[in-house]
Length: 109
Image (cartoon, rainbow, N blue to C red; front, side, top):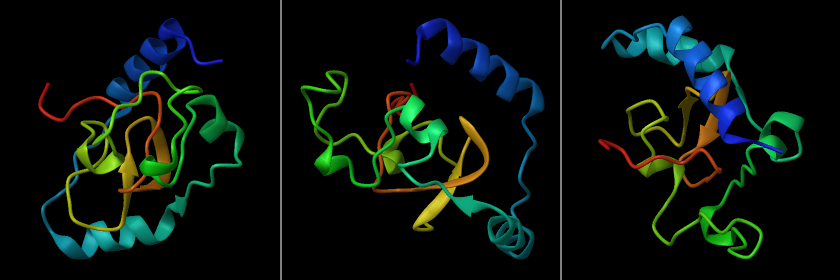
């Protein structure tokens, strides 16, 4: 189960290891090629209740989910327009912009 304490610990660890991405598209494309898409069946995805389609999230199971929330509107996903982008919660992995997880945070808040 993902607790607030474990999420904050993970966020602190990620903040310490964060690397800034250059604006050049070629290195970003090469970096994305090395990362793999997160599957909802993986233990890391299950720990944060990751779903590939936010519209299919069960509100009874995930009471923090609200209509309109998705990885594309989350502050934790890398900026860009790609279908799959990196997420600061899961270094080295890609998540779909249509996805959702319990760590969702409104961009800019």
